[in-house]
Length: 443
Image (tube, rainbow, N blue to C red; front, side, top):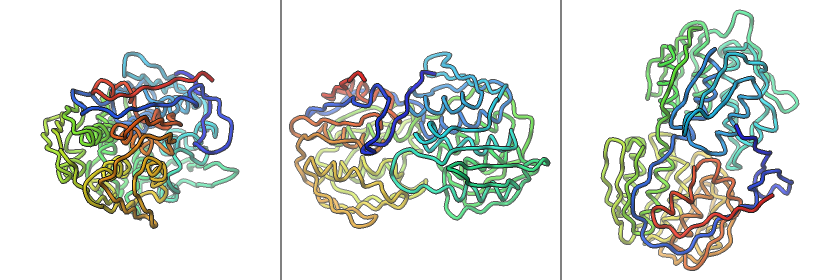
């Protein structure tokens, strides 16, 4: 994997060694987007599948892997643990976990990406111990790890937080199956417990489990590797632990959030596009909201067509765990609501700091009032181009979308946030007709 220097959140005031830290994107008012775009594999799936490869004392091949910054970082985390990581074909990643040499995920990597904590479960199951730095990532809220810890403790592990690290010790007898009730359907906690339970003795029951498609993909991966799991796609999972976890080749599901982002971009520009490579069922509530805004949607097996929405109508959004409206699509819809006819209320129930990008959108003329976890968006606004900064991954993408419909030139800075989750974002939008350009600034 290509070595990437440490990066920090925008506004941290600290120096950063990334060559692309100063890169920026310029967007001109664009015509209606049209054409076809193929989405990459799901970021929120592949990172956990990479972590799950730690359970396998052999070679794992993942296909449909996006070339994004977070995959690079997770690859570096695995390399620090002794996994051999290599791109063996375009969008194909090979992970050789036969010779783990460490059970410690270092701070300088985990601090960049919260998903790194996904190695807690598989390291505990395979090595009997894990040492993982307390996480970082997008500053969108206090995504606590209490449920991860409580779940591992229920399986018999001793967990301590010392000097900024989560330390897990498993008794010599190994992890023992248990019934775990999550107080909230946390995606991260569900994934960590699934992976830990895959090596535990007996059958572990996880109740109130998260149901996101990316979790179902993780379950499918482990089932293909030989782990008996029942209840895929439901809120109750039964995982029977085994030491016979075999090598496999697995195709990562398409990224529903990337697909949703392009669909909102098309709706905002009165476009007509075809998005390929994603299961429409994974975006059902998003597609329904787009239809409520006036878009005409057609669904295929792995394709979604959006036809000119005309003048958008404002819609209320309330983020919830799957199958509710995804928090990762909230910012894009707020950008659309800003130019839609009428007013709307956006309610963020998942991450308390996910309205940070609203101030940047306000620099472009959007009329947004924030009160706690509610945002009142007064639509029918003519946005104007302005210099703005990406506060996080999805907020950065939403600012680019706003730039497509704003008068004049919009300049988006801190685009490394966008790089975390979108492969060739500018290039794909440009193929659809967007007037967009990325500017590389050497370090």
